[in-house]
Amino acid sequence: MSALESSPTGASGTDWSLGSAASAPRSPPPADRFARYHRGDRNFFLVYVALIWLGILSGFGPQVIKHIKTDAPAYPPIVHVHALVFVGWLTLLTTQVLLIRSGRASVHRKLGIAGAILAAVMIVVGPATAVVTDRIRLALPHPDPGFLAVQMMDIVAFAGLIIPAFVWRKDPSVHKRLILLATIYISDAGFARWQGGAMEALFGNGFWGNATQLYLGSDLLVLGMGLYDWMTRKRLHRAYIAGVAWIGAVELTALSVYTSPGWAPIALRLLGH
Figure 1 (cartoon, helix red, strand yellow):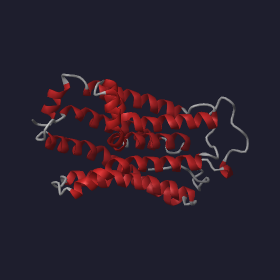
Figure 2: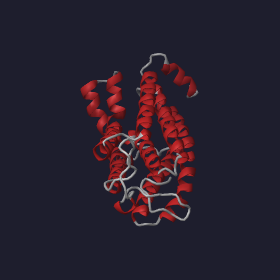
Figure 3: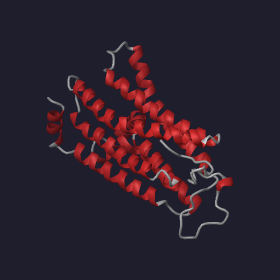
Figure 4: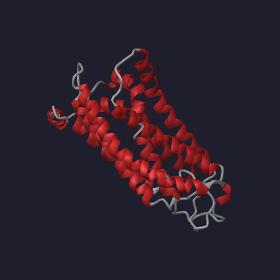
């Protein structure tokens, strides 16, 4: 994982700065260009990482505590691997932001290699965990095999954002927005666990009910990113616009497949049932 914030220009000549006043361009950019840096960026991206942690811990924390207290059957090993990998990603992201804030850009760049490897592992472990856990849930009352569509599309969304994030890692304004969008998207499960019940009570389980249960929390963070850029630059970044379009297309696809009557039998076959 590379810069969500950036540091002064290194020996390579690449500007890894995220937006401190000291590293801002001496003259303002042309009016038709997106300003790469703003003094508020430094705190904005750190706050957003904290909000993602809050959403994940609020959603999964009570579930894990309940699992331990009730002496429930142990989770399959793949679930522990999944938790380790995905928490590792958030921990690395947090570390990267803090490294930049402390001026340790060289360490930050080296850890970026580990981030790329970890992202590749996540793209494999995510679907594998979904298949294993969904097979187990088939033996429980009221199974929902169709939910496999949402789980798989989560990884599709993440891959579609994280790959270009690393490709454009030398353009901090592109890179950091795609990294953050990718991480926000895969945090949807955490947000859904603590706000999904309220949304179900309000909107039911139809298309829009499922949309708010599954994506409202993470989508609000996505919209907040755009609001921040508009307030600080009076325009939206092209990477943000492309990322939001991708997120919208993936969510629409996931919801359409999930709510389609013909999908559940297909999902059952995919799960080997």
